Image (tube, rainbow, N blue to C red):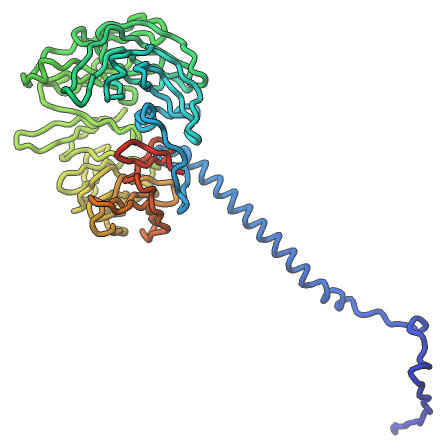
Length: 483
């Protein structure tokens, strides 16, 4: 078929004669053009939604991580490079913050006021506000003159919301003009308080008691000449009595003048008796480990729940007997090394330190590893690793093999302070040995040890430590809560 063409006439219109746009049939624009116009906005909305979802996921994970770390003994609340002094207690409350008990969001403990009165005080951990104060002994003009505001009395958790305190009006007098002088007590009491409001639940006198260990419903008291007595915490009714042997091989003046003292080690009652090793009793008064004549001591690691009985060989070497509930006692060379935080990722590991650092199986006493590192303070156990301070920096070791994971360095002329962790980093003060240099708080990455951030500490803060979940700054004049 051939191609045919046909000519058509075309009329050209002037601009004025163009038909009105509304009178012309229009073909709808393809839908894709509308999509093209809205696409950037759509992408932006999706991106924002994705970012919001991602951030929400990260926030959820962060909250979950913080909640998990909050249950790990020794892990402090998160801090960052903007770390500062959140609040600083007065002199009368400094000891309470440094050595007090964390209960119901507060530091709770004994405090001696400027007028010589003695009270149990609760201080809010986040703000420093005094939540309540319960006076146990009124003003004492003689004690008010002493420069020593410390108290030899002690408090311990009895239940979740109760605190038991052994208190007396005896103290050590100290001033610039004379040597320290012991002022004997004329009144000694066991006082039980509610930690939520300071209300006294029980208050009863005791005689010649110098130490106390608290267990559920039970106060175990060590008296100067009458041995150990276990009493009902609230009523004082006697439950059992233990009479330790007389002075052993140590016939020094200290052995003749010191008294029997008791301490709590988990479910066990420890009894120290000058000239003897530590005796161990259970909560019913049954002797679990009798004492032997020895010059010995102990360390109880509350974070790890480990009791180490220390002894010295004839050649002067220290040995540690590790006592844990349900396990045989394990005797190890070296001094038991405590931990300041432990996530239980190495449940069978115990550490000893002398000229070197050693890891042991707590169940069998078999050696796991030996490291030439010399620890200068308690370790942190986290995610299967052991972190320890040394004179030259922090070292991270594989908890199973002892192999070096990483090593940090300190500023020349500085040494690392005590280790702490918020679960995401190792926190430590890079502190000068002497001079006017300012200390810095450094956060080290757990995996490779690179510094995540460094923050100068306030001029009067030389080092740091942790109590419960709180990071503290230490100065020559006292203590400060960092946040």
